[in-house]
Amino acid sequence: MSNGVFSSNDPAIPAVQANGTNGAVGVEASSDSANAITASSGTGPAISAVTSGGAPGIVVDSETGPAVLAHGIRGVGVQAVGGGAIASTPPGEFGLSRHRCGQCHAIPNACSSCGR
Image (cartoon, rainbow, N blue to C red):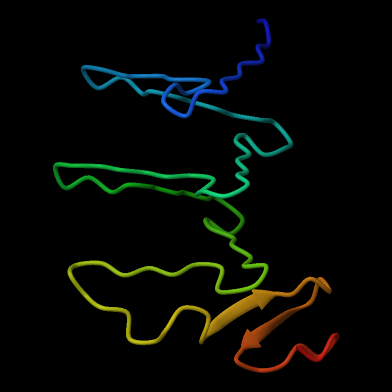
């Protein structure tokens, strides 16, 4: 199996596009000992999922570890609102956050390592 490196410098053209039809998966990734998929972005979302027809945007299953592990560098790791609901607290007010010092703490408590 060969490896590929793909790139695009046009915002309208993705570096990689995969489409599955008639029930076929668009992209499948696996790894025996590392992340199967890694995503990063400088200014926009690293991962964006859009769905229609009542299907979930993202489904995560885990046999042994956390299904979702999220660290917010300067805010909440995960914020979710659905079903027409309005968030009851402003983003970053509750949850866990990892500071630049590398320590996690409960918001709004100050970080025990750096005091912020």
